[in-house]
Length: 298
Image (cartoon, rainbow, N blue to C red):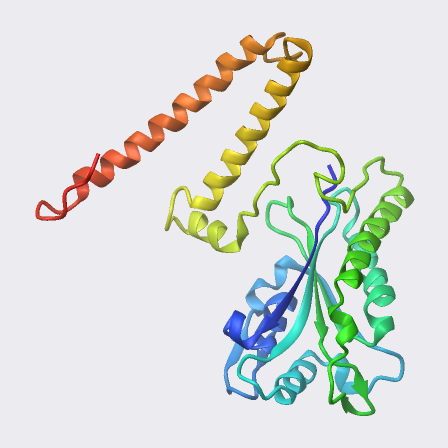
């Protein structure tokens, strides 16, 4: 099933704690030196996960625009504040139903139309995970337009307009659907929220790369983000079941029982399993605490 995502965020010195040169190196799988700090950011070893990358700028842009090292070091050098906003990033989910070439071309065409045409310089990088379950594109954008051979003195305020972001989100959905249709695929995406689509479900939280890394490295067997996702999924199942019970008296199921009470047996067994896990975790914490530690209130 095709998944919609068009997330926009700002990369700044204050929030990210590193330079936009580092951000570019990671997203494009490159080895770049941050001239401002003198630090080398080497992500060339992860280049296998980067399927394709390209820099696109306005017509007649100077040659340095297409060199990621020069481009993002000029961005860094032009921002003097310690909390400066360095770049805007769009994270786009691309349908796994499309070929890698179609995935990248869809994002490239969208970036040219919606971002580059307004004066932004964009670095577009298509990422594929090892599992192939989460193909996505990072679009790193400059915060200033070009003024001759350099960046402009002022940042365009219109690029921060919420209405513009809403338009960009909708236009990305249109671009994905057009690509799916061209490929002869029946899947479609929708940029609207669950509420706007009339779907009575809780939005599923994002797991995030930090929680995923902790689980993969064995730092935490079950990070809180993973627990939150399971909880939301279970709550949505309950909401659907109760809604069907109130409307029809029972829930039609396929493969898990024909009525709501048959389904509830499986559902309750899952709750017991999760409850047992919580009890085991609490017991481990209790027996592993120091003997002279504080008493635990029950």
